Image (cartoon, rainbow, N blue to C red):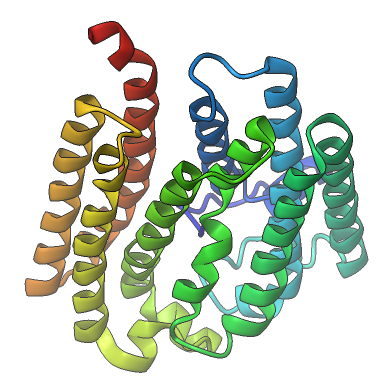
Length: 301
């Protein structure tokens, strides 16, 4: 799961600086999707003790990954208006402080998951940390314009983590939710990259709008929204969800496609910004609809 709307850090207390390293808005969406996975894993309510421990553990490890990302990318962050305010980029926190902070969060979250949830969830969460913080951030991001596509696999894992926390296994339903987030990530992030293209050009990162231009990127945004629309129908087709979810997925998906078409036909930074913001709302509402369908549809029969 990728960067959402950034909020400049306050330059006040050390606490606010450390909190800024964790990218709270990004982590909130990650934890939200993980909780959805927990709630969908069983017909009724999951074991609340396990769910609470899993939520805390996943939040801690996700925050650790975000802090490690800020540490590794501080030289890039300094060149970009969107990220220049981060404490590591401004030198408010040293490399040692950021590394220790990330390590403490990651270790604490892993212990919580191992002892209070199950080892499978701990290892899957650790693999997600490595996938995002190392494979994506260190290797893929500076290497290929398809970085966000390949690296999106780690960002798509939260529902799988939530499902594994409650069920102790990875089921096909969890993988469908993972696929949806995986396909959502490119149009979400490329919409941002389109109106931040000069930032990425200065940073030297080979983002798609920099390497292949606006037209090609906008076409890819549209194509991914179409493939994403098809993938969001899978929960209904496989019997995981009912008509309430289907109606929501169709409406939300058609709006996303409309944004993709408008962006493809006539570009503007304002439209790209609206597309990016809608993509965040889209994913939140889609998973909320999946959850509402899970609990409400049995009562409607």
